[in-house]
Length: 130
Image (cartoon, rainbow, N blue to C red; front, side, top):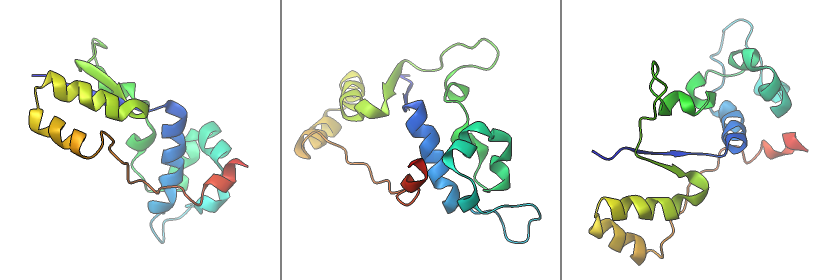
């Protein structure tokens, strides 16, 4: 077996989780739930214990990435290759070469070697950083 995973810049990942909050609004009728518009990105970063008051999003979206990459007891890596989302195209090519996945490599070459992400989360949240 060849185990691989991808990580993301921690700041980008945290901001993405913050941006996703509006997609997981607190359930209607739950006492104490607050609208996300009243919870800024600095609040999200500095007040982690208040996040669940503003969203029903699973907390795994904003847990530290190492939670998913290392064994619990021994803290040993559970992967053979760790790619970075910021270098996804290059790192995926390395994985495909390692796996000798020639058909997938041919497809990657046919589309110009670039895999285009489809993510629009947080397009309206960027104003909160200003």
